[in-house]
Image (cartoon, rainbow, N blue to C red; front, top):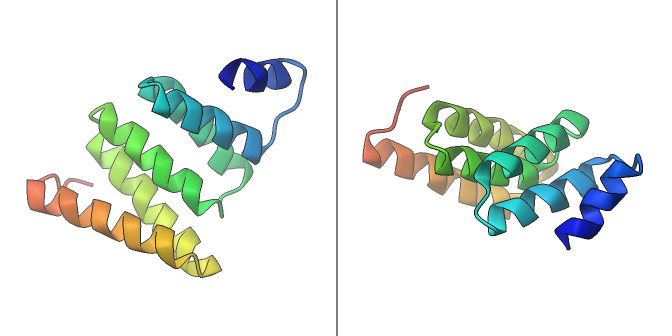
Length: 107
């Protein structure tokens, strides 16, 4: 899957959906740095993409960048609330509460 998406990107196709697919694919393979790169580009292209914010936070948390993960999830909450995406809102709220419980409350 990733190979095909990378080929599309190399051909000049660049949109939020493609970047989301790349980000999810790399995150699923355990490459959080590449995932974060694509997911950042995704939310730059569509700041309302709450699922992308959610995965971006996961990728950043995996890399140990807790303040950036918190920021991604906070922005993702705003996007989810603005579009009535209750599931994403619920999940990101849980992720933020877990950071608080772990003592990772830094912003």
